[in-house]
Image (cartoon, rainbow, N blue to C red; front, side, top):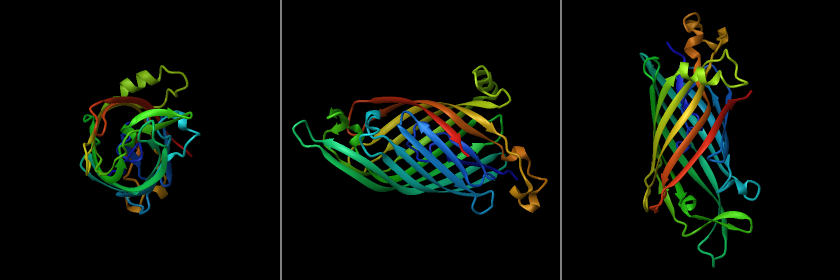
Length: 305
């Protein structure tokens, strides 16, 4: 029996994160925190995962995120956008493949400042909406199979605020145009491909400050995101990611393993590859617009304590 959990998406399981990766999380890491800083999304988030049932199949947790609305210039001028969600994950193994289903339920808050046109007054609001997402994924454990995949579907209320023209008023970035609300059904398909440990190690070990004894893998990713809407045209995007994964080697203690499995489960069965640094680029077709937008960013993931 393997104790690997092919579960949490690096961004906190919320499928819109462009730098999200399909991540393996160790079951015996009870009460573990993961953090991520993302320059493209102007966000910081934390995910806490807890193996509540003491089983190889279930994991529960909570995810929180705060981001700067519209532009980095608003970092200290406006309230942050925020998200908070509960996480439940179930994983099962068939042969040399892990399958998982992860559900998130929570809410998001959005700080809005916009105007209809240059002659209209500025309107402000802080809107809170519920959101639900479910992720289905598969992670082959055989080293000769470098592919992994995940599909996320969800439902929430959203607006076209981020697609409106950005203007500067009194030193702040706000949006200008007609604001439209709608129920949206965000859907993301993500495919990852391991480029190889040899390539990852050869790149990283040439850089100063990296421990030459650690093992790294380079992973490329391709994702497609669509937002069908109850009213109006959908938003859709495609993006590429390149992520450096570090092998987290676990040393099992007797209390980490149920008595019947002691001596059977090995340290290698719970070790996993953790995303650390990710570079990504995305092309997006905005809601109700024929004009494409491109963006990119760098995400850093770390664990503490």
